Length: 274
Ligand code: KMH
Ligand code: ZN
Figure (spheres, rainbow, N blue to C red):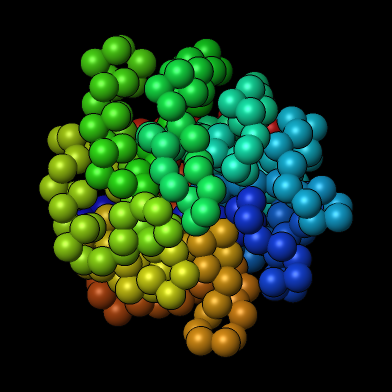
């Protein structure tokens, strides 16, 4: 097995500062999270941004500040969200790609998201992919349901996407596929040849899904975007969630990848300076 790539998703779009004191709001706080999570063993950071008052933003200027703050404090692979928050326009979601992060997410289909709908029609996906191709940004395919892999194959047939790719299974969103072992095995078996994959289990399923992925040869995403608790009733810091995965992986004989080793595994070019 390759060394384990640990992604940290520290912010998300749905959390509020009232839910946890550990939500990074300012670019400086995000830079600090990048530093502590890199120290703990993370290789990749999935980025959403907040205004100073904690509200969600997808402003290009704020992403630039966040990008610079992360770069100043770490060598993590930087992956921007193009999912943004429910209700954002596709243009808002894609605009951050002009900053040319090494990676960005591409959610591969519409999904119920609690009582709301996270809209990713084919025109939206095509638009985001076109911008990724224009700016040379590598996608990470976000798969909330099995049909999302079918959608990705359609985008491949249209010539917008080529396999293999890096895929992240986001399991346990109310409205998406449940987080359980059977579903994870099914999804992995359905992947096009040569793909790498990680799993992001939502809520209390973050830890069991991550542990399964470590044993199966996949990779792991943890962080407050998906789960704010370390254990029942005890709020987590992002670096604690990373450190726990690193310890479990060590027990299972799986060393973690540095960011540069992760770049090799994912087929990314070495990061451009700045
Ligand atoms: N906030 C969710 C609606 C992504 O980052 O690409 C979408 C999301 C996915 O977080
Ligand atoms: Zn996200």
